[in-house]
Image (cartoon, rainbow over all chains, first blue to last red; front, top):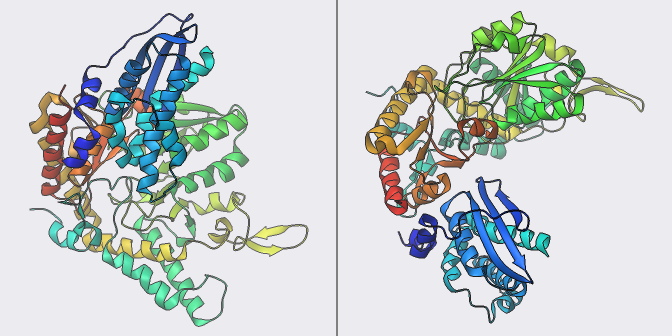
Length: 157
Length: 411
């Protein structure tokens, strides 16, 4: 079961079973963004309140596999209260986490830009998702929330 | 006592000796694509080693041999589906291309704005999207035969749906529900309304005795790779007079009789619809696959599948009770061997991820049938599908792996 336990870490299953920040926010003032993974039908809906360059509140809805839903929950906990600059940096770092290992898996040495993205960023619980990179088809499940977040930020700013 | 000696059959499939994640491979995804027996692999290999050349062109010995083998495959396909003549079998890339051939050649020269096509809610995207494209391009109306809560076609309003329709496009067996549709009465109703009938037979030709003449259908599409043959080749069967009247689909070599700077005339059937070099090696592999199925006997294939599906449905219900929802008819005699299900609230992709850890291969997702998934009200299901090389041990391995998935994701 070692591979599976690497993918489905306890903290991921915890977020999957008890997702944080579930709900809706009134639009406007909140911005709503929707992400969709056509392969497995994962669906992520975000409601973002951005005030004075800070993500003051955010709620999540949607449905899908444990990885997509846990990743969305973890993302919501990680970005709430952060400035947009911090959120964008965190997003880059998370995506780097998802691709650095991928490139290592493919035997490529050049991950230096990605290393830079990770430098100085505290991913905390999000690091539990790094087991996903061993299961390439699931990477899109993990990054869906973050891509949906970027869409929302672009609309809100 | 099974109608098929599964242990002997298994031994004919080299891939079934594989070990995945420390477990023997349990392949339950034949509805997506079946595995190949050694006879198919050897036939394709032998052609490449001994007789490979382009077909219908060279006058040298191996070109003659390759052409003869290629046409022998067409004859075998025709015989296997009960077609009156080999030249009514058009080789295509797959069943999807066969349906597109009908959509581009027959439908675009016969349907105009305001005409109607009748589909069913259980169609695969291959039998939906070509018609959506036509609807968009031509303003053709699409009408849908609904399904009942028992997962069969609701035929109450069929005559109304068929009124003034030009085509009924229907699957012989659903790749999601397993439901087997009774084709002859559908054809009768359609013909009575003046509509032609296209049957998507991908999920039935590999599993059931097929007789397109008894169906009285007009177009039948199917592919090799779901019936032990290679991917890359499929076929359209259609009645000669329809094919004669239809304009060509793809243009190029092989499909012409003469070409000048100002025009061309088309070759005779079936080559009129086979532009370019066809899938020669694959055709030979398909022939070997048909030989294998005929040696087993399609009645025995069907009897075995009814038996293994019965066992699978019963075992899943006994082990998971109300924690499992099965989408499809309960009566194994009324369905094929594709069993779609949801286990509690666990997403199909999580289920199949855990199953893979135990070497069990099932399909997870929308199964290229999103209109149906919307009717069922689920974004995705898991699907186990059984074929001649699956036995009760495979079902037991599935159940055991599902129990582990349940433990893992228990809420």
